[in-house]
Length: 418
Ligand code: EPU
Image 1 (cartoon, protein in one colour):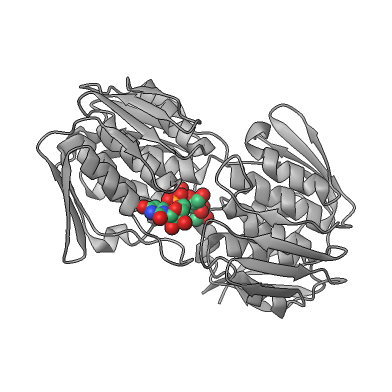
Image 2 (tube, protein in one colour; image 1 turned 180 degrees about the vertical axis):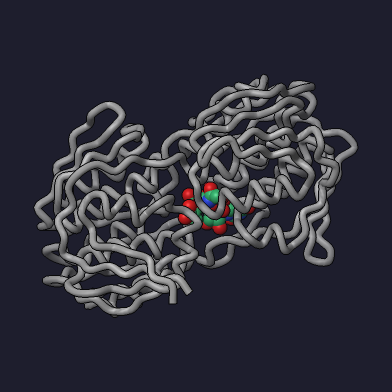
């Protein structure tokens, strides 16, 4: 079993380069199924969620050529199956995007419900509502979601909750549907815009991505493309939080500062100095953290996927901080792990109170999910002595070369195989 071992208290100094965005990549790879030509996808992060999805495409019959660690070429013309069984789909949440992509390509899809991080119920009712409004019949039998349409026809679709997954799936199903689809109350995350840009580069007609209303006029064919994925907002935010917590002076390279505004604003409120260098951010911190409150919101609000990492920085703040999680029901599982390191967090329901302490002390903790794992890494950097993190496969789902990137800026971190 692989574990991460961190000896904390090192100041961080140097540069960290950010990889391509996981949540854009996992939407763009299935989107390639819709193309009649070859899609060259660049700046893919080398992480297990992406590699699993590429493998699934290959198993479904697509020709996938790995050009280098961050570039693939996908030829979907050879895909014959529209069925994705449980042993494939349970591997990651984003396998649900195969529903929209298969539906858009074959007018039918049979996909087992997706897996992914466990933070409470993760419904797909809004995805299903979208598919139905586009003219499909959706039935669930033997733990498989069966979706079939005689013909996909555009429609007005109002999402009851702002959902990244439903917005992606509806876009995938609608790009080749007949006529106009309008998604109201759509998600506005940078990865939604990136998916739209990818589809447009294949010949799709999509307007308004990044706003509440996305308009998609169906086209009959999508051609091949070459496309480079945006940098990962959450990976960047995680390293920014790490520098602020551990203290240091680090340039976070290959970022889009606009995507990081809510995270930057909070870290500045907490005492960091952050300079915008166009495609990089310089983050400086003396490790003295001011308390603050955080409420997670859909983009452009503070991202839920940064909530565990920011809470970890606040464990050593100069007072009590209140964190309100408004997206997921159960995203404070990491609090118990941080408390093992000497933090003082009281979490109940969707609110956590973080009482700042003098410092953390090393111990053995678990990565209970992807971002909780990132939080443990930050905690290990702050803590005195040795922190051992178990279940690191969760971290490897979303962070490329985390050990190398942190070692390069002076962290004492390694992977051991026991
Ligand atoms: N929701 C519904 N019905 C639906 C879909 C969602 O009620 O049909 C609710 C959910 O229960 C939740 C809220 O809507 O309360 C938002 O869920 P959303 O659909 O936006 O989440 P998701 O698409 O499953 C993506 C990211 C998550 C991230 C959320 C929120 C991907 C692959 N995953 O999940 O990322 O937390 O959006 O921003 O894009 C991560 O990267 O660590 C991660 C978990």
